Amino acid sequence: MLLDNSIEPSRRMVWSRDKSLEWWTEIVPKMDDKQFKENFRLERSTVSLLIKHVGPLLKKNETQLRSAIPVEKRICCALYNLGSESELRTIGHLFGIGKSTAGEILHEFCATVVDSFFYRLVKFPVTNEEIKRTVDGFLNKFDYPMCLGALDGTHISIKPPQGLELDYYNYKKFHSIIMLATVDSNLLFTYVNVGAPGRCNDAYVYSKCQLYDVVQGDIYSKYYMKVNNTSVQTHLIADSAFPLDRTLMKPYAIQPDMPKENATFNYRLSRCRSTVERAFGILKNRFRCLKKKMEFHMDNTTNIIKTLVVLHNLCIITGDNPGVDWDILVPETIYKKPLYKASTSSGNDVRYALTQYFLQNPI
Image (cartoon, rainbow, N blue to C red; front, side, top):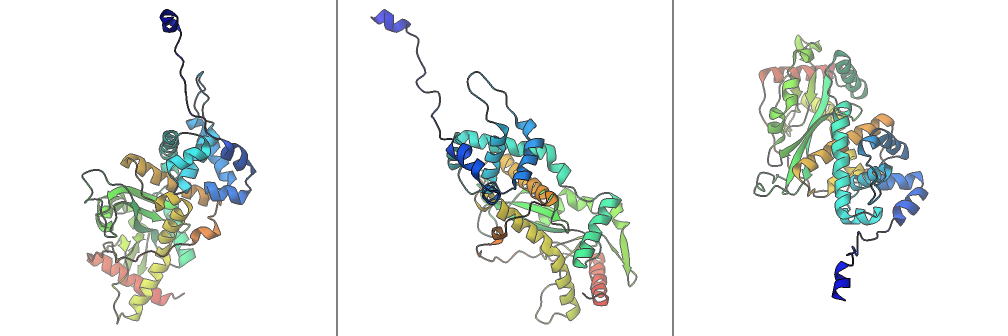
């Protein structure tokens, strides 16, 4: 009896737990276009575009042990993850996969999108044609001349690296990394820098990033207009958290007895600079994962944010507009943003020249 039992081959009792596929196989195919977009945050046509261009890079080979997860399911799983505040465990239950598999699918999708499409869809104007198109866009839509882009930073909540909690604790009283970005008149992101610790201020991050050196290039000084013998070259616009110089304009300090011409300048600049605020708002409302704390490795977190920027630009290019009710925001605590008072004489001259230009060219 002992001999017989010893030679009987052992059998694996459980290879994997059975999981329900009902939501993916039965419910999703029956969703109308509005329901599909509410769940995956993109229109079916945009998802089909992703499947066509990203799918071949994500496809897995079948094995004798188990079937590979279809590309369509992998991409939709990643999009659902990016578009909701759900935990990986919940997403795994919906798609009939494990928690760890849902995480692996997310990170592989984001790494693939960033490696293949980030620099193709997020481009700062560097050629003569791109510079002219960008400047004309701001002038035609907002009556603001010589603008290369609206610049600002936003905080993304994260779980800080162990031992570096203080470095990532920001003035809003939570741990974060900074996403510094510029957008054009169409709300397309043209430059993104992600990963600076939340303790840093926007001006410091800008001074250390590649964009600061790029805008000093000679090609941008070739595009200028004359206002009362002052050359106003192409430049960025930002809020009071940034330094003032000839390549970056910021508003005058708000005062109770502010001169009318200064208030006019502030209004015209703010009217144009609202593009970057709107772009951040659309990004966070479309992709709700930005509303929760990201608890991934820092490299994965950075890839996720860059992927969202790529998808945001793709949606604008394809006409995949955000849902009307996505813009409804819950009132948040208003924090006083740290100011940066540094300025250069050339920056003051350019700002004064623009102030005179706005007085001469009212809207």
